[in-house]
Length: 413
Ligand code: NAD
Image (cartoon, rainbow, N blue to C red; front, side):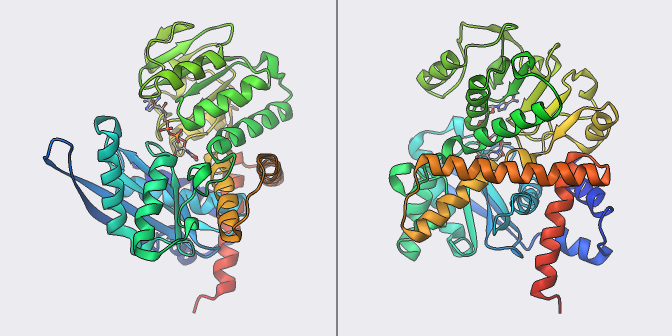
């Protein structure tokens, strides 16, 4: 099943619970605008290389559109469309004054040098600078991009439009970035995992966690949960699964990642090294946190998953068929549009600071983030209990209702 079809499935399941006409459903589902551009660069050795770049702007009823830039070989129009739609519901669930967008370049960044990635980013901005801006569409980091890419993006965009750091978020802290942005998604995942575990009557010290992906989101979630006394028994990245049944030394893993030229766990000696797909099947594991790619839990592998709780740090990790099976089995799934909303929340704080030319302390950022995440969790929990639906359907119901209301208030002539 393609990514957008999966998003459509979850949307329709929630819309069925709401009073919403067929025609409005279609209007809310379809993206406002989709852009596909050619990105051409000269490589370090003098050859030319061509890539395809995308930006999908899904909905702006609640404010300027917001969403990450992904550099990954699987980026295409369908994936960008699905992720842009998720951003619309996500910003609405945490009640930010934004709509949703997403985009990126179909490229494996590990095969290119830093200077090539810079040229690629600047060439992409040359193609899309007219359709993004602080009041229209504000990109941010996602898989394969980081604060350095955001800085190049801003610098290139400002060559056309003049100084305005609010055009992009996730910038370096010294360059109008927000303190706490880098850790924000992982912190949000950690905060809500803790809350959910408590709500389910489980004990942190006895709750074994496995995390797929040890990039920005996975590593920060691991650090936060480790500090909260949860044993993290396994983590993985593209080099494999690292397992220790007594709990991994997360500080040592973080130091190893920092020292590795590509930020990988390759060569880590404090754990058993297992194949990539072993992480999903580990038993016993209580909480599984997919924090890498989408579509990793499908009808084909759902039966091998033993965890009682799944926290979707990644976007779209569970396919609809697998989601139904997990629901039937009583597995609690904390959905992506709630679980990983910490990143866009602190991106919003960064945008606010940029517009006010004012800096918040790290304490303030963390406090406001925790408050926003906790409030959204309570809203979703209550909606799920009231309508006897899953947390995912409840989160979509809240997101869709808010976007529907804004659309109707603006007027549908
Ligand atoms: P990242 O590029 O920093 O890290 C990705 C990690 O996944 C790396 O450790 C990589 O080695 C690993 N990985 C890739 N393929 C894998 C595989 N098949 N098995 C195991 N590990 C694999 O990316 P990120 O920013 O941490 O994003 C991860 C996920 O979180 C994405 O789905 C992204 O959309 C979502 N997300 C990110 C943010 C953010 O603020 N960065 C916000 C919301 C959602």
